[in-house]
Image (cartoon, rainbow, N blue to C red; front, side, top):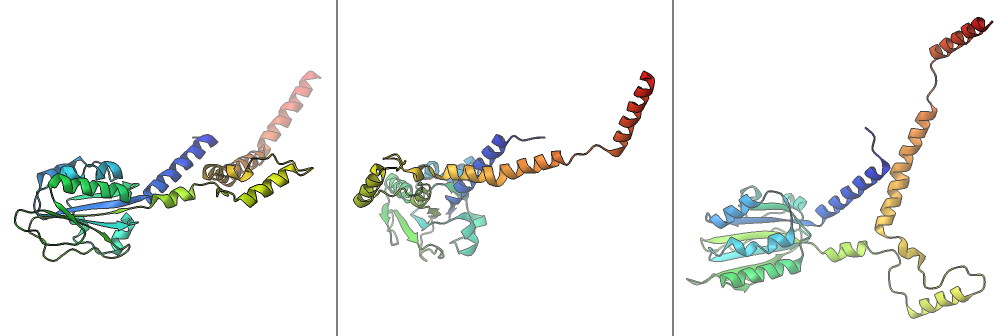
Length: 265
């Protein structure tokens, strides 16, 4: 089976995009101290371990408010691969809901979701735990330092829910996607470019930044072309050039030629 160069390049780009998506992901764990039908239903509806973060954050409040205390622990830049290196409040295998890869989770989206959830439950939103009085609900939302263990208060009420998740700083990725030399030029630099453009014998067109075209997709395409496709093409050409006619075929060809000459005579 043969694959065209365009198919190979497209596949490579898809794989690169998928790898980048997994890089920009964080896990979500939910533990409930008591059985809960809404949480069980939410877990049953999860058919994939890879889900857009906003769609999950926006539906957190649908889990309900059947707890006296809800603890949401957040950690910056948390990834599924970090779980084995830190200690969580409960065993990951015992989580009532576990989504390994929330794609592109942001702190703003989580903040908004937690605030909406607290308002939906009529719970007091705090960042330091205090035991709720009878008939009250509290939602504790705090940030755990990156790479540190996630610990809980020791006097949580019997009915409590714990959520541990992370977010990613996507602005770092966006900066990586900017073209080279994308910074805004200073006034002196602009003036220098104008002088060079006006100088006799200078063939550079004014107002055009040649380096602005070196974006990440173009660089990836060039690397694929010269690092993958070109070697494959050269190997194919060399293999074709190395094909030789077997000696036995040459002998048969000579015999046929001699017989034909005799017949003509």
